Amino acid sequence: MKLRREASILKGKALSSLRRALAAFNSYEDDGRATEVLLKLQHAFEMLLKAGLVQEQVGVFDKQLSQSIGFEKCVNLARQHLGLTADEAGTLRAIDALRDEAQHWYNEVSEGLLYSHARASVTLFDDLLQRAFGESLVSHLPHRVLPISSEPPKDIQLLIDEEFTQIAELLKPGRRRRPEACARIRTLLAMEAHVAENVRVSKRDVDRVQKGIRAGRTLPEVFPRLSDVGTEITGEGIHVAVRFVRNATEAVLPVRFVGADDPGDAAAIREVDLQKRFPWTAKSLATKLELTTAKTRALRWKLGIDNDPSCTHDFVFGSQRHRMFSDNAYSRLRDALPTTDLTELWQEYRHRNRAA
Image (cartoon, rainbow, N blue to C red):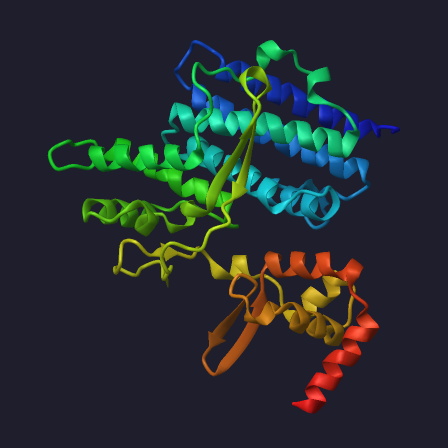
């Protein structure tokens, strides 16, 4: 593979940041350690994704701003061009969300959670490096710089349960440990990015969770999304591999979405900025897929997109109703195109409409 010059530079920056992250993880200096690990991991992945995109000749500059794109856009493009899976994208978004809290406010990431994310980062970095450049991470990093822990990585659900128990203990009457509890709450809220897009931790969410825990709510009630987060752990010692995956389980509890100022149920999840979550009109979705709106509508019908709440949302403004679509809808439509005979589908769709 002939490596493009800019891709080589970006890949070098990615490896440098990864080395810094792992050196910080293994450091004896605890002050600021978790923050530095998260900052460097996020930067390492942004540079690696951009390196892969540049190598594939995918534009990484915003045409209007003439500036390089941000992390979230990199992840979305990597889903299209680098074979990034939904689980892998979730891992990257979670690291970004954890980094965001550490950089712009404060959070508390337990040693177990930090190790799981650091080890998963090494596994994912290696997977992406091989996928994009045909290179193994072991050829760039000696084993001595891998994240080392005196304990093997624990199942993520066990770690989440331990965190929840610790938060509940900190919030007991008379403890006066609310700031420490909120720091841990912010970490768990940020981890929802493993299974949900556009996660933004807000003070309202933190307050709502805190109120729910004080009222005796359970972990599935307060953090229903986290029940979908799982890990696959293989190997042992320095050869252990950790991958975050979505649990193939049904939702434990129904989830009710509430408005930003809703003072009601503390266990409800607030959906942050629905217009960001559902940015595509039917026309813009068709344009992005390079299809006519009619054929896009037929493909939506075939895949059941319009009946999937993760794919579509109706915005009501007075007497007008506007149907908008999410990135998840775009991904499903795009992924279905290579195996779909559009001519046959269009005939099937027209026949169905005439019969109706």
